[in-house]
Image 1 (spheres, one colour):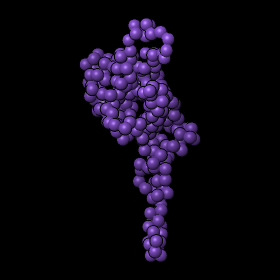
Image 2 (cartoon, one colour):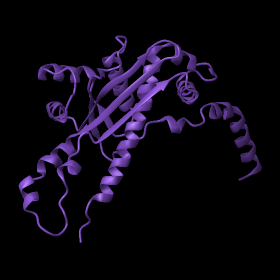
Image 3 (tube, helix red, strand yellow):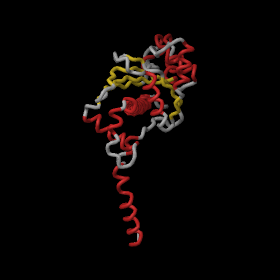
Image 4 (cartoon, rainbow, N blue to C red):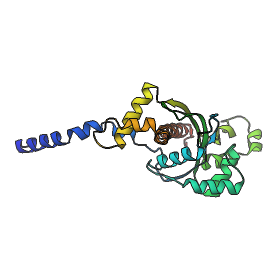
Length: 246
């Protein structure tokens, strides 16, 4: 590298250094996907088990849709389409694996995210608790491929996988309660807000604290991130458990 190139490089760093530093850690707040190929997901309306009439299962489900669809190789069906299919099926919530399977097949989805709101306080400092579950068509089909009669007839040798392991549903569950009064939550919210607000707006996170809709968006991001991490860990475990060809 010539001295002229060094000088030019130094000038570029000086000119852009503020932006780089202010957005340091950006890569840590981008959803990653565990899927090597495209997956189509749907998100069901969340049931309200918080005891608060202010909790909106439709709004939070919609935030989950928008967060999950930012992950690479993940497409998410519009929430209104899922609601229409649920209404056609005569259900207002996914309360069993059978509901999830029927809804996935009706929509042609590879997976379904469902769950409930467990805590909700919209006043400063806001507090939201959620449980979300992931169901997959692949796991449901694996369960149906297991023949209980074949399992009962099986004698010595390598045991066959049990239905509970092969087709367990849901395949992933994450839960949490997040209060803006918690310093750890506040720190994460500050970073999230800074990355999505105007440059140098170090107080952008206050908007997420005083607006329950923006805070719900932030919590949906946190839950989506945790769900994708749990799914990545599950796929690694399943690959390790899969028998190798001799």
